[in-house]
Length: 338
Image 1: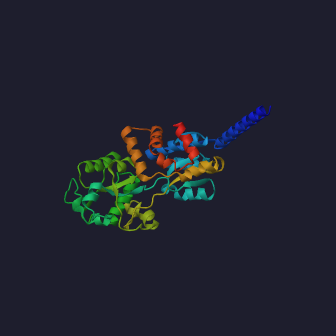
Image 2: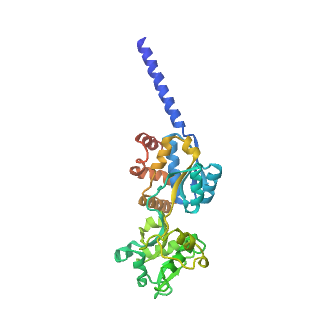
Image 3: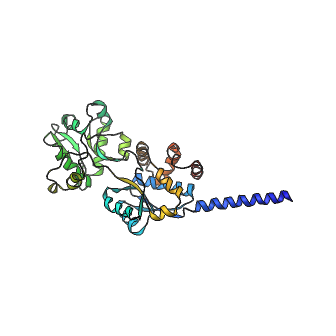
């Protein structure tokens, strides 16, 4: 009799603990994640979905998104719950206001390391000319970067017309007095033209100097080298009040390093308060090394992989990265679910 009593007590506790565990996992509830319309953000959204579902028992829905519409919806409607890769420079003031008023929270201010915009050279150029340590060094040697149409001039490849970065590059070109120093500002015409210009230079072993950003498949595929500007950031008055403005509104641009790119993982107040502390801790710990993200973007480009498949590839290939974001118990649940 005693045996049966102990047996049933054991069963009771086992069931109780199982139920308790289920309740704990269910704490996260239903959440929505912005599946942004660029590769790195889509990868992050899908990785978050797998980990939150399998590791924390969340019920996750991905919703289409992009920077401005997603931020506006989160700020005004409280949904989606998570924007994994919000490029915040375009919404700095309203984001600060929303955070200050408690509607939104910055869960992670560095979800990807080594990201940002700026000027780049090829790895072969950096190897051939180790003396070119800064943009100032490069600008002094236009002869090393001959323009295809006028080889007597150096070619600096800027942004396609219509892109926001076109204004910044054009004004920095003036600020560094590059035309007087023997350079021409090349408009690549399109995203494909910009990518093609870089790819052709790398594959034909020619020097290349121009604008790009990271994380991207192009930077990862070709191992492009970021260029130190050789001058500090010139201040928000110069940048916001001149560098990013049309030429007629920027009569006297000053040399400057590129402005820091603010990229955050942002969550709603509902997620912070209701999804559970462990789920919030995961997002706070979730940081992708730049070289890993660039490598994943190369994979997505070459394999034509969507975010769903790329997430599985990342989780299987880079356990050494993501298992540092979660507890060992959660890691085992995630591994079992993929």
